[in-house]
Image 1 (cartoon, helix red, strand yellow):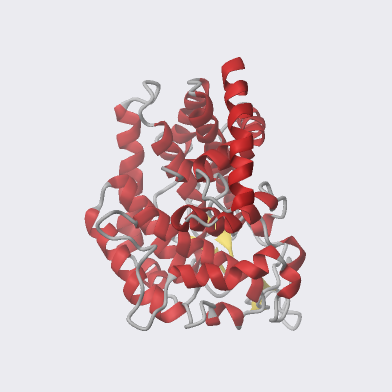
Image 2 (cartoon, rainbow, N blue to C red):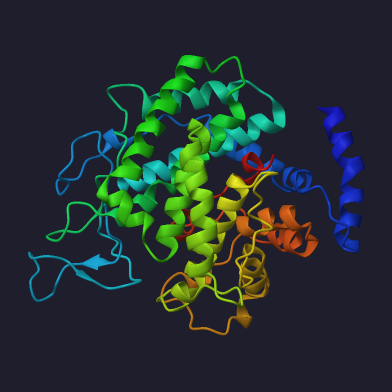
Length: 391
C-alpha cells in the first residue's frame, strides 16, 4: 500500500503538468487517479449488497411471468377523459406512477458489477470477484431468480401494448455487467462453467434481439434508439465472440448511423427536435462513441472513419463539446425535464480524449459529476465505470 501511495504521489505532478501544457496524458492512468477513492467507496457498498433480480417484484399489468423483465413507457399517462382506458402520450414528461422496479434492479446490478470490476482492476483483490459471481449466478443461472433472455414485455403501455421494441433500450444497463465480467474473467474464482453459462444467456438474448420483430423495430429506429440497438448488439456480440453480428454492427455504424443521424456540422438533428434536445443529444453521442470504443481495431478504426461527405464521430464530439463545457452557451431550447441535471462526466469525453489525445476533453470530463444522483441521468448514462472500458 505504501508503494502504491508513493507511486501516485510521484506521477500525479507529471500528469498535472501534461494537462496544463496540453501534452496528451495516459488517459487510463488519469481515470484511475481521478476515480480511485470513489471506486473503492462504491465497491465497499457493493460488497454489502445481496442480489435483487426481476423475480423480486412483479406488476399485475404485465402479460409476462415471474422471470420476465417488465417496464412501462415513461411518457404515457392516464387519460383524464377516460381514467380506466388506454394511456395517452405526453412526450418528455415521465409518469412517476409507471412500473420501473425491474429497470431499477437492472441499474443496481450494473452499478454493483461496474464497481466490483473497477475495484478489482485497481487492487487485484479476489473478494470483489467472489461477490460479483454471486450476482451473476442470480441473474443468469439460478432457476429460481434468473431473468428470461428477452424483452418481450418492456415499455408496455396500459391498454395499448403489452411490450414494444422501444423497450430494448432498457438493457443498455447490462453492458457494464458484461464489461465487468470481462475485466474479471481471468480470475481463478470464476470457473469456466459460470462464464459459459452467462455467455449462453447473452447468446440467447442476441438471437432474440436480432430475430424478434421488436428487435428489428428497434434496430431500424431513426434516433438514439437505433444507436443503442447497435451499441448493445456490439457489446454482447463481442462478449460472445459473434463475428457476424460484430461485422454487421460496424457496417451499420458506417452506413446507417453516421449518414442518417449526424449532420454536416456534427449535430444530431433528430435529437434536437425532441422535447429534451440537450439530454438526448448527449445520450446519442455517448452511445455512438461507446460503439467506436467497442468495435474499433487496427483493421477497422471507427474513430477515424468518415462518410464520403465528411461526417464523423470526431465532428459529433467537437460539436457538442462547447455545450458540455458550458451549458449556458446552448443555443437550442432547454429540455422540458432534467435540464439542470446535465451534463455529467460523459463517456464521450473520456473515450474521445483517448482516441484523439485531446487533453481539453479529458480535463472537462474530470471536472464534471462522476456519480450522478438523478435517475433519468443514470439510466441514460450507458458508461458509468470508464475504467473497465479502457484497454
